[in-house]
Length: 209
Image (cartoon, rainbow, N blue to C red; front, top):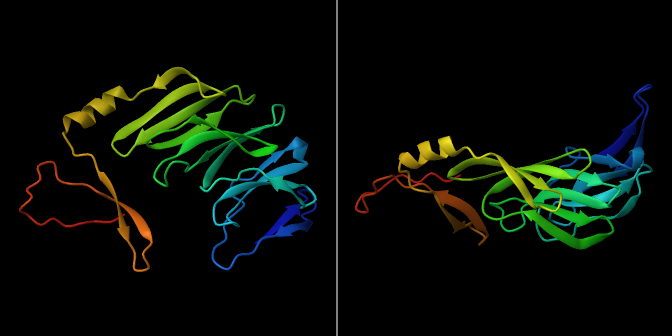
C-alpha cells in the first residue's frame, strides 16, 4: 500500500511511505491530520491488531500512539492542546465497543470514557469538551448521551424509550452469544436467536452470522 501526498493545484504526488503485509492490508479510510497539517494519525494492522501511529508530513514515523491487544475501530479526533487522542475500540470483546482516550505521549495512558456491554460510537465537539455517545445492544435500540470529555454524563439526549417499549411487548428472546471452533481450533463468535416459544423436542434450523 503506497501512501501518497498530492498537491491539489497541480496533481503532482510524492510517496510518503509504503506499507506491506503477507496477509491483509487496509488503510487510509480514517486518517486524521493534526498540527496544522504537519502530522497525521494513521491506522494500521501491522502488528496483528489495528493500532494508531503518528506520522509526519515527510512520511516518517514519529511514534506509536496505541499499544493494547485489541482493534481500534475509529478515530474520534485529536486534542492537540491537551495532547489527547480520542478513539473507539473493541476493548472488552470483539462484540463490544468502548469510547477511550489516550495521551499522545504515552501509549499506555488509556482511559475508558464510555464502555460496557454493547456497541458504541462517539461524535466530539470541535473543542473536545463534550461528545455524544451512541450506544446500543443486540436487543435494545440506540441511546444518545451527552458526555463531558472525561466521560461524565451530562444528560440523555434520546433514550428511544417508546421503541424499547414496543420491542419489549413483543416478548422476543434475547439472542445468546456463543463461540464455535473452526477446523484449526480458532474460536469463532456466533449468536443464537431462539423462537419466542421454544419447544425443546423439536429441531430448528441454525443460521450463523
